[in-house]
Image (tube, rainbow, N blue to C red):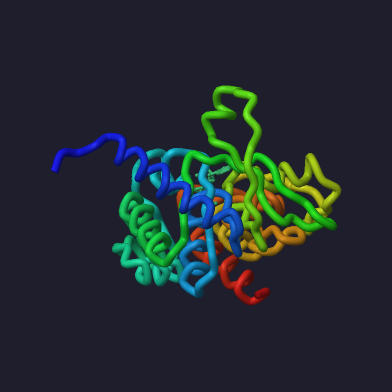
Length: 257
Ligand code: 48H
């Protein structure tokens, strides 16, 4: 059989369109495919929720690929190691309370679990705005990342979501849009984004979990974004809080129906 380039082209266009159309209305839209977003996607998809991750970069994994300062190893605490066990990511004890894992194995394996559980990942798509009805976020406004990178004037498309997770890391991009463009008050002590504080790993890891919650109607915050939203410190290249936050946010969404 001779390969036909046009058949390949049609197959890609049709298959991608099917995938995107199927995700124009989802149970949960996850903004950001870093560790928190990927873990949340897995736990939601596993119980049958329709989940789509929108990731602005070409690759998923966020800040986890680079470990600490591009030394591509991550460190996790015993509680998070159990989660890595569940994902079949191999860990090695460094000393009591500290386990290491290969960052590349962690990202690729967790993503594999999430997609095989049914979560869809749309890379190269930036969430640039939200849709609001009666004080609630009911969906997202998306566009190709190269559109914003090149400054092209191209109008976006929209996705309806019963719930949204801001898992955009340090940037808190969804919350920034909500703060800038809507009258919605965030569920933080100040009612606004409080901003990330300087490094304090122990406190930061605890606060990441505590601050993983619904931050305004329809929007949950997870991972580094939770620290930045609630004024928590950063923690450096320890990833247990990110992974456990992804699990917690999925559990909250499942509990809220
Ligand atoms: C689509 C977007 C948008 C947008 C951003 O940064 P991440 O890895 O986030 P987490 O919270 O899963 O993990 C944080 C961790 O990687 C980290 O940075 C740590 C532990 N830092 C400690 C320290 O002290 O520095 O992933 C977020 C993802 C990225 O891939 C972005 O490209 C993506 O979100 N993203 N995707 N639309 N508007 N904004």
